[in-house]
Length: 325
Image (cartoon, rainbow, N blue to C red; front, top):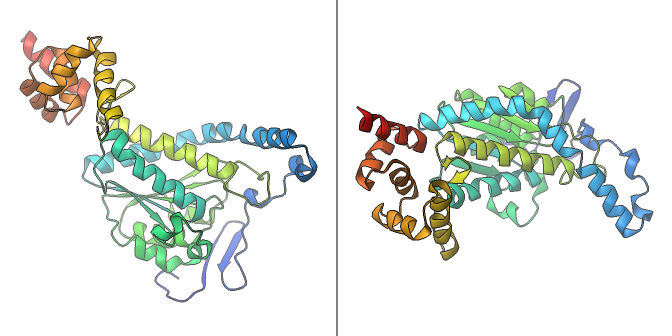
């Protein structure tokens, strides 16, 4: 039950009863089936073994493709949330939790996203990033506690290959109580966690090459989902122009050089000119970009960006319209 502090918790759903007790938690998911294609993997020559693993990996992209219509719903909900001042919360245990932390951590340097906008929660806390804490995912009450800060303006995404992780169940149940939009990323077509989700994004990757080792295909699928989700969200949030990153944080020499190169790629202007424009914009890549593409000075470009909600194309359109009138 939500809010319990005992060591045991239970969730159930169509075709699944899962109990987090000292006796173990039964998981009913395709990820737990035995894979007939890899039964001889332990006697294969090394190259053949690797080829067999690669054959299994090759099926993941198609599974992700089938899930994209549902993923699009989550991206759109998260876009609305961010524009309203809300946040995105990831919840996961084990591999899922570590992938979530990785995804959230990379959005700052890549897209200039401020800390705390996309937040990852992993069962067992930060220590679980470097040392496995598999028992932590069995505690539903801890998931609920980690979701205490979720509000009705937010989006909560639970990541669970089996679709039955009690920690994630507790988090999503609490998030739903708060009025947040909720989603589950899973490889189980019948996830018990679905009862807590507005959208289930299922990548049915089937039986793993090594039975139950969901860090393999299911983990790869979750990585692809997270990459696609967060990248699409950042594009919708105006943090790119075309396919170029325009809010990356220049924390080292490589990224400072990349800023100038991106401006040149976007505008077709010599890098020396772009470096001057960037300096005039106070190091703000988007202001420099709008200035170069519209011909306006940095101050006008900055004002247009503010009025356009930080969207470069809309800012350029505003400037061009004002020039024509």
